[in-house]
Image (cartoon, rainbow, N blue to C red; front, side, top):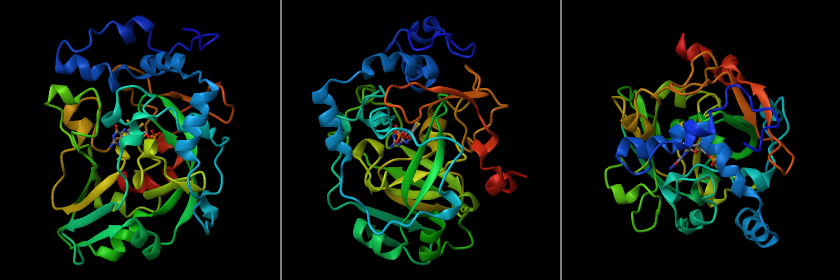
Length: 328
Ligand code: MTE
């Protein structure tokens, strides 16, 4: 492994990461993606050296219109680490609808974001369908810098632009029976080209869920932008979930539907591999993933070369003061 001068002891061995025979059956296929975790991520980085032409193509995907005015929420104006380099953040993504590697930024450009609509429905007094303009008009848009921790044990620090989920809740007024919320991502089998589609048995669309009191928490955020600009497609344009105290897979991308429910919804990864990917999925360094430790993380920082730094993972990703009460 060329990325580590001294491979950290927690790194999955290359053999463990690649010995699976892809496509033999559904289970093994899935393990080769999110399940391969750290090993797979490190292998993918080999392909991350970009030519000048690739860098220009990549820049075109994220040099989008600026969002203004853009006040930074003072409570989330900084974190304990540098903000991740934008070129790296926009070319190291998980968006399985568009492929099973970290390099989906090009194929994600097929996502059609024009005339986007988000339907908010279910157990609410004021069901409503928003377009992007009405979201920007109805909610106060701000910037928040959050730590971001993927279940695969890599992390970033990202400057999101958006609004708190609780503001949308206040607008639609959940009924007292509403206890959970389901979030559905864009799905169109003709457009989303991820390698799982031919198997036909994966639980698309990507869906995620929260308890209603989690959605009401101050931290829960809808992002419509990042780095001061509109959200690039590879990050889940035009609107995605950001839940900094949970593993990254809880943050569904390209949301088209939000439903308030009286019972816990099925979610994508939890349906596929329930013993590895729970519904709650809070960042917890003391609870290892069945196949790797969650005690530490590879932090991808502000240098352009993936010189990641090994850091201790914090309980609730460092946001315990906001959310620990929810799980008492
Ligand atoms: N949302 C959808 N619709 N499809 C996905 O594959 N991957 C999740 C999450 N949201 C995913 C998704 C995972 S595993 C992670 S770590 C984050 O998106 C990655 O977000 P990023 O690529 O913007 O860093």
